[in-house]
Image (cartoon, rainbow, N blue to C red; front, side):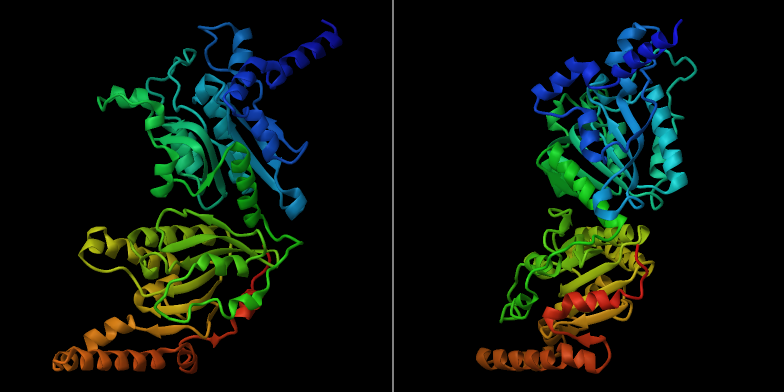
Length: 507
């Protein structure tokens, strides 16, 4: 056989792994308004940077189908894996090294087969060795029962893929992206990723229709199982995207915060912060407006917006430097921290700590949500966990109190104590106390208030006591007693955060 013929055969075989060689499958995706797996790959990775593993694999079904057909119909065994670079233009070539895993739904509905798992495992092993971040696209239907070539396995439960993937936690940042159906094993990979992005047209569940029906739990269509609007509210999805294009863009942007600094940035007029707080301390306000002003323009991304709404978590940049951001939202429960928001904050603290991202906390909370209903949600366990995670932070935290800093909730927002952060500052509007002023007066002066029968006089005494406690707990007084480090001009917030972080080496 001539060398030219061998090379031609190689090129022919290589073509079958590409969209050009699988035009029918690609057209079917396009007819549904979707992209092919390799189109998503091309959009994700830097040009000419992809180093692929196992492109010539096919499904382990040679005993039931023609090998020539398998080469096209089951190209790469439904999963594209390899090393790449992402965001070189933003963070530089050296910091852009990454890995990617792209499930191909056009191959047997993106199901997980024998060689498929081998490819996944090999990449996980190498990624762990080099400590690289991974972006994974998870669209697919879970385990594949049709791999008839596998004759040395009964249940196939010894597959190490899920342990290998989960074992990367804390070692390699894993960002999952999903569009379409994501069931069973695919959902397990999605759910155990560090950051989870999904399109509006996603359905994510630990079992698909066949498994649910087989378990005697009824018949459901795929679109009845784990729709994205449900999974967003329960915290499964961190970021909702319009489509695959936007989801890919979000994955790249989120990854960039963990890759390092950006050299170019723009900022809004910081003097807006001086009068941004409402005049009445009892009024709520949109804290996201403050976040957007403090952050470089266009560099704020929020996670889990519809879950644990009393606390906001996300990423920002200040002069191009990345930070994890946590803030209380006074427009939900007055900024009180309920069990869901405590879970959300704990997870976020842990994520930033594991992957070396410094944290900024914007605090305005009356404390933890209390009462019988809160306790029924496991408040003691879930809120206490915020202290446990906060005490283990391995990255610097800068605390800025915008207004209320009351009780255990305020302490939990800043790592457990006002002296835990590298720097604890307050805006002039800050107010501090062991509990909310109103509650402190009602509890501490209960007898005095009960002795007054005239309602007008009682209200006057009550208000005068609240005013006295407010004066005593104002930010200036807290700073004078060294409970906090400083009271700052709100327009200087960015500068204060950067100065506080100067002791930290650049990532």
